[in-house]
Length: 256
Ligand SMILES: [Zn+2]
Image 1 (cartoon, rainbow, N blue to C red):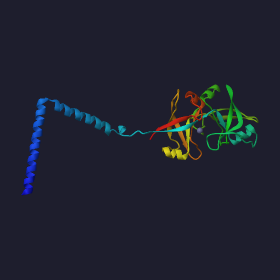
Image 2: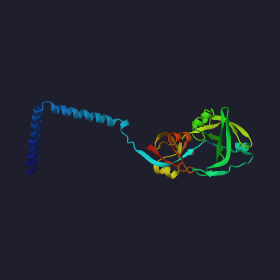
Image 3: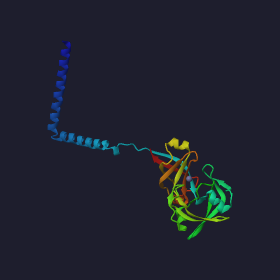
Image 4: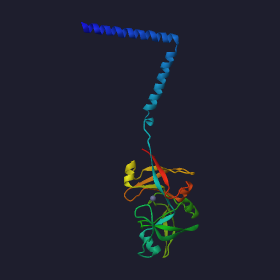
């Protein structure tokens, strides 16, 4: 009996409150004419717009930019030579002699130089050791223009259909039909550095430079693995465009 009385009392209370709110709402409608209706429509419209925007998968992602500094290495024009061409240019069984070690593990600028000759001119090139399976000449676009070469921008080792020319050494000369490229900008990373920032070999990042000629360089390939040491590689044209030099710091920027 008590429970029935309690429930009845509660229902009565709710009824009174409900009637009170209805009467207030009616007064509001009368006082502000159609204003409450307008507000309801306005809120509903805004909610619908927000809901449509949020439901679109294109808007439903989180962009998170990552950034870390990396030391710059500017690559001047140079040559990588294969065993066969080394024998022709410098004599059978000849070896490269270390002039200076460079940033990447085991690589060095050698004492040996060759001359690249085209119908429009010639250019001396230092050989970067050790010897490689394929001869590869890396020029800046300015160098290629001076020599009248249509050298494509390529990643190292992608030589099919690239430019050719004549190489002259102290002991002989060799005509190459392809192998002359403009090296595409890239970064080298230790496996630990790549893992730390969640990057892997083959990823593409941006490079942001500082200073008076600060620039953002897009389409920068990540090369990561045991054979690589942390370094950004751009050529002399790119470095001059940004007023940068080797050993300066730049920022690697990418989104995760
Ligand atoms: Zn490199």
